[in-house]
Structure formats: C-alpha cells, structure tokens
Length: 119
Image (cartoon, rainbow, N blue to C red; front, side):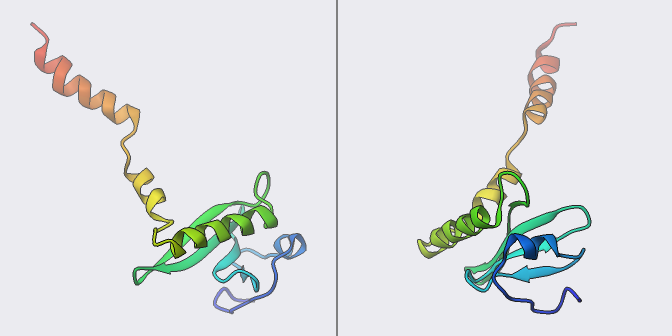
C-alpha cells in the first residue's frame, strides 16, 4: 500500500496496530484526523487549512497518554479552535521560536559579565 493512496476509515486500535511504515490512515468520522506510521512510532496527526495555508499538526505518539479516543478528542478541540478563528498550529510555532535558558545565559555572559568585568 503506498502513502499516496487515500485510505479513509474509522480509526481503531486494531487499525493503528496494523499500520506499515510510511502508511497514513485518515479517519472517516473527523475530517483531517489521521494516524501515520513512521519507522519507529505511530503518530496521530491533524491536517487542516487555516488562512489558505495547509497545516499539519502532530497530536502525539500512539501510546500512553494518546489512545485513538483521546487523540480524536484532541483533534476535535483543535478543529474547534480553528472554527473560533484561531490557528491551532500558531502556539506550536511560537513555542519553537522561544529562546531557551541556555541561550539567555550565554547572551547574559557575553553582553554583561565579560563586557563589564574589570581586568
């Protein structure tokens, strides 16, 4: 079965367990909700369009805490955010762009400590 094939049916645990690497199954109940089998992991995803842009949102890896039911519920809540006019992937993108503590410490040491330290 190729990844380009549009495979749509209700996703169940049995469906997820039977996935082969590279295969994507789309849910028949929730539009845009699917599960994708990567080499190592099975990942729940939501594919949607916001403001003319196609957005792929990773919900989480199959396994605790993500079951088919919890991932489907999360997909519905993300679609609710979209219906309310918010971009559900925007929070993820903002999180990616946040600076980490290591970068802040390095910047502080170079800008303030080294610059103002006496010889």
